[in-house]
Image 1 (cartoon, rainbow, N blue to C red):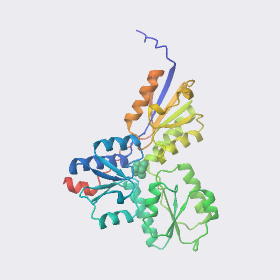
Image 2 (image 1 turned 180 degrees about the horizontal axis):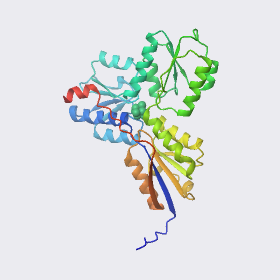
Image 3 (image 1 turned 30 degrees about the vertical axis):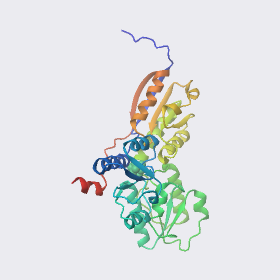
Image 4 (image 1 turned 120 degrees about the horizontal axis):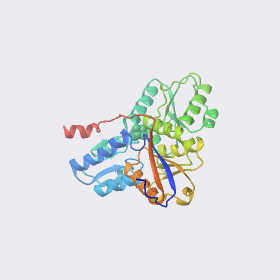
Length: 323
Ligand code: SF4
């Protein structure tokens, strides 16, 4: 029996895998939900727990209260959770001074970068941080060391013009959610300019960022368009869109919800790839797929380029409570 013609244009959709939530994001969201279950509302969260408005609104509806700084929190016995991006050392110190119970949901892969920076500092090295100014992860990493002990470099030009007192005593660390290719160029520039610089064995870019970028790189040149589901303030989502464009995809867009899709742009395509940033929930991928299914006759195929079995246990403050 042949299928009934739908009258809609045909569209081949390639769902990329891995996509969406990484282990650090799952852990951070679980931490807020567990804290709400154990301590009741309100549970304060410093900064967006992960960079996704849908996730934040969902947690708000359950009783989470989002603040940018601790001084927005009244004196309270209720906990505050630090976001997956990590915080400067001054923040837990301030929470302790005010006797606020703090739960640290910093992703363990960000904490690893903090520890690397600290070790370099203890060994007397000036630390160069490859990253984007203003991103909370960068603010948190800079805040691990005393002022002047860590310098942010954002571009190859920054490296070419950098003047340091002791070029033989340098180290570098990187933000976890950068473009792999850009970071490779930055590290090459660092080692060219400062041959004795010490760095991680591999870049600090995390497995989730790497796998999502690899999948996009592989498929983007073969499709008419690529959609990244994610927030515009999500670094790894932004990088996915850039990677698609650089890989030769002529139409790449980053969208949070189905209502953000610019439908005119997609009217003449026959193949579309969809991925999602590490902080974007699968329910939003499904919402966007449903919106495409209303307009197109979809043929959906999943292309998987890596297996992820990474799991991080809850922050220890919660594990202790649960035990
Ligand atoms: Fe951790 Fe990477 Fe996820 Fe950031 S994107 S929370 S570093 S696993």
